[in-house]
Image 1: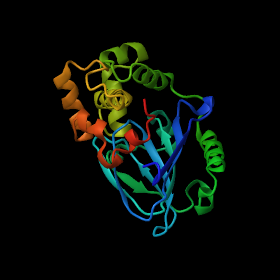
Image 2: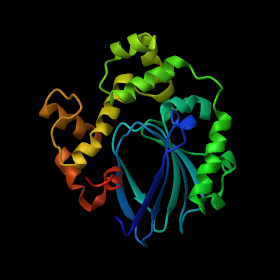
Image 3: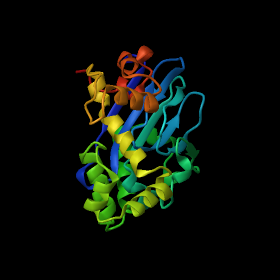
Length: 251
């Protein structure tokens, strides 16, 4: 992994932190394909990619509810922006409900980005930051902001009833918002965030519930549902195929 895949991530400055989870790059520095598995993590990813065999292109990946398999071509370089769902309606001005577990190819020259923007990661981040800031509204619905703040602060361990009470939205309104904008229920999204919060624990060898799962059986069932394998298999990470585990810091 260290010799073949290069990974780097940068967190956004505070004004963007509610909307952008991170900017990151992933490079396959070998002359061989790398097969990887991308786990659900609650983010929406915008990819800017090119390789020796692929022209520059941009794709938008919606929220994943199941593990996705991908092949990283030799010498492929990808710069990416991982968005929190709060940003989607403002930044893309459309619903992504049809992109659950799917990606769509974006038109050429989207946001005026091209192949030359993959030459310098810092310059890419600066350009992307400026563009995103220009698209964000002056005010964001406080109910939506509170909704996601509560979900992330609890690592997904919060009921829809509690979300409704603290965000001043009804349960019906919350579920309608998630369904229409993101293509899944609020509960399903919370489960993904709880699963993501388990990544570091599993990486550290803590193969028992840490995030308010009912019991060990429930923990294993939920991990298998979202990862396709047991917590023990995630820890093994054979062939470094689970990309989020391979990029986590070693305890």
